[in-house]
Amino acid sequence: MDNTEKIISSFLNLSQSDIDQISISADSSVVSVKLKSYTSKCPFCDSSLIESKGFYKRKISVPVSSLKSSKVVLLVKRWRCNNCGHSFSDSKHMAPANHTVSYSSVLQVMDLLKSPAMTFKQAAALTAISESTVVRIFDNHCHIPRIKLPEALCIDEVYTKNSSFDSKFSCLFSDFFEHTIVDILPSRRKRELHRYLTSIPEKERNNVKYVCMDMYKPYKDMASIYFKKAIICADSFHVVKHINDDLNQIRIRLSKRYPSDSQEYYLLKNFRFLLFDRSIDLDNKAKWNKKFQRYLNFRQLLDMILSIDIDLYNGYNLKERYFFFNNSSSNIEREFDVLLDDFIKADIPEFREFVGLLLNWRTEILNSFSYYHGRRINNSVAESLNAQVKLVLYNSKGIRNSERRRKRIMYAVNKSGFLLK
Image (cartoon, rainbow, N blue to C red; front, side, top):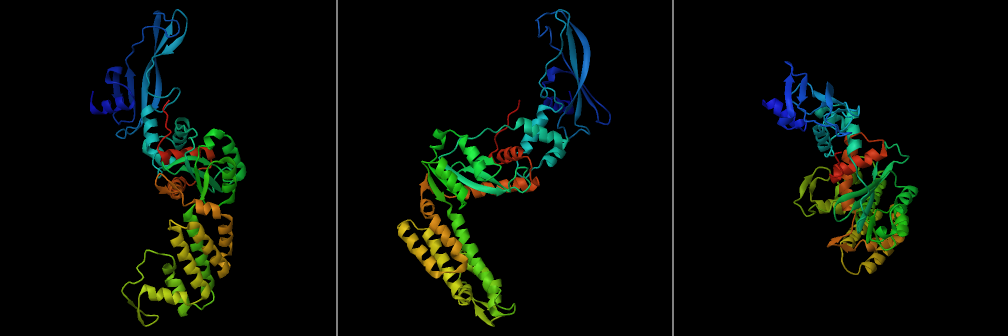
């Protein structure tokens, strides 16, 4: 048996002793495999009175890149029992029952789909089978049951505009400690959250100790109902992001006030990063600035920006103070209340909504200073998983079927859920 024949036998899930003959056409477009028969009794009545009824042809797809065709014609022996009258064929486990795709092709497809960047279409091209067959293989062999809720649960959402479900956002449940997706709901609406959480036993829900979320009120409402023994935490990243977004709105408002050739507009447009990027060395070596015709470093430029308007000055200082508060470890209640009072006194239009959030989410923000297994509770795990989820959705151009989308995302991100049967 030459090397090509050995490759074919391995992809057919056969030992070399099972094969009686392999023939390959001159142009490698047709491969015929004849199997040896070991049948001696009828599987229905255990009689030895059986007679050969020849062979039947079974076409099976195998991932052999060295062949021009990935189709193999398998010659399977047929038998008839003269005692009970049943007909049957030799049983060799080369492909799932009533399927033309070999187990090896199934394994290759499922292995390819572990990559978040892999699409059904690409997997079809690499395995030389149709895209619809790849989708069918995935649907039939990817089985992901509901995962038990963790002690520290993160809730986030991902934008799924192409969903067949009447919702633009899917809800993502993730495990803060294990860094895995627990489940994906087709909608973040209350009725869908209610449907899902009521299906989970109360005993399991009561084992959840922490629930972390962004400041989306339905999450808070559902968590207070279904996770009665859990500490509800507002994700600190979303709070800080909200402040930065509001500060940027102040900058935009001021930019519209000045002409495009003014020094104020120049500063607000070209050095806006100084308001937000805390990793910059403000005391860097001064560089020549053509606009001001003198040497300036980043700190001088920032001072010039903040001198443009009192709202920008106060907004920046409040943002910086919240950042230090967010990284503090003592007197957090007192510091929060003082900071909240200063936000109210500043009366900056762009911060009014944020002040409302601070008032309504005070308890949950303070809860976010809780620690689980040595790590502060936050939604960074969910955000990291969200990036992988977005990669799956981007490469697939969205998956309309919500159940298929759930399985595809969880399979690619968690790398589990494949069952060959």
